[in-house]
Length: 101
Length: 171
Length: 342
Image 1 (tube, rainbow over the protein chains, first blue to last red):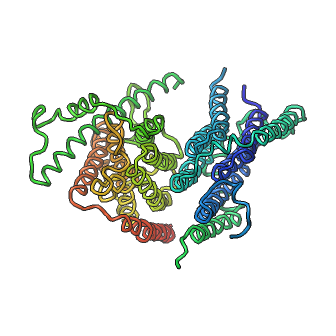
Image 2: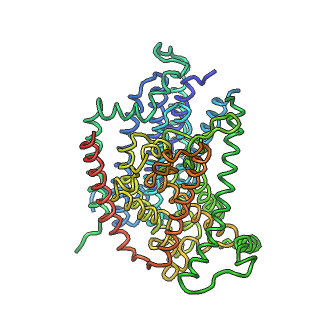
């Protein structure tokens, strides 16, 4: 007896929505960013689940590219956060509300 | 109960609980710790799905590189404690959780009450070969060579961009 | 073989490897003290047992009986978690290191490696990348400036040197065409040791291994004169012993990895031409693995007591501007070799 694919998809949906909730309720820019990573990961889980239930490795290659993009995004995003912190001395996204300084 | 189901339950519980704990801790370092635990659970799930290469890459890239970067930034910046912000807007919190719950129920309805596609096979015999490093490497360097090169270029651009953004301006 | 048999055999292997490692670690500490004494013209431990041979056990008892001090400002859970992570990472890596060829015991065909998985080298890389957390957590959770500085230094150092380490390994993988450690050892038959074929990669890997294990000349995370003790300033008793054990266990892993990847693993060139009995050949081969590892360990200790510590900017310069380009040159060199000889 094996696990139906719906279970993986439901797990992934749950994690995605936890990520969405995190983005909505948290005010720390870094934690918001981590919630986005969580959402990316839940999407990855869907891709890998489909890839192995279809017996096709393309889904996993897509996950590989998603990881590349996540790494690039983390580097640039954290650099932006550091630059912001240097200028405004806060990480609260409610206080970062103007487009220039 | 077979070993596979037991492992699925263990790993999915790890992922779900750590995800929830991650968004509810007020200390950013603890949040990052739970996110690492969540990634470890996901790596276990990938192994269950016969995706060994992706599982190891998950640990190397996410846990070994990206999260270290996050921890680094959190430790260096020492962000203020967030408790007062978490308690400041209870309405917003309820609203967010409600929206998430509604979308989750919709997705569950779609998943369990729709007709599954015929090409999905419940036995995963075919997939054992498709997750090996040989299979993925072959695909990456033949059919997906151009996206692969583009990804490399993206990483280079991100490195340069991150350096320029985070560098102190010399006056 | 049935599942039960496989489980029992694996358990026996784990038990053997674990006891072997713990014994080696405790005696490595003893030899470190003896060799340092010899390098500095002193006597070293010589009171407990014959020539101080029981010193490791005395050390362990001393550490066990000490009071476990947790600073007031520390985050208690993470403070205790950090040495556990260090030990976990150190000991799980042994699972994929082969110490000899397949042997026949009681009719079973047993490979002398705990887990023969075909992504073995990636598994090692994944675990070493997790090793950063032990030190980062220790540094952050202690709630002390020195610890935090040590933790941050070490994570920057380990990540930087992981890159040249990865690229040096890529050169090995090009030649072996496999990620299985056993296949890598078998691809170095005769005198085709990777240390001979790609000497630049050997050197970059060796230096990165020193940096990854936080040994002198790269022990900036500890750096007693400037950081008091670095990331383990606030640790005492068994938790300190955990870090201590992990450091020596990492040294053994680094030596075993260097042996597997570059020094031909268990192989002795041309031993099959001597016409010895099969079991004797196996014994010699396993022995040669341990001798190679032992010599590398001696080298680790020797370097520690001969070379001063780098300054932090020097360390980063060497990592990014010397080791990284050198490992890339090595990769090109291996590719050219393959193009010429294939």
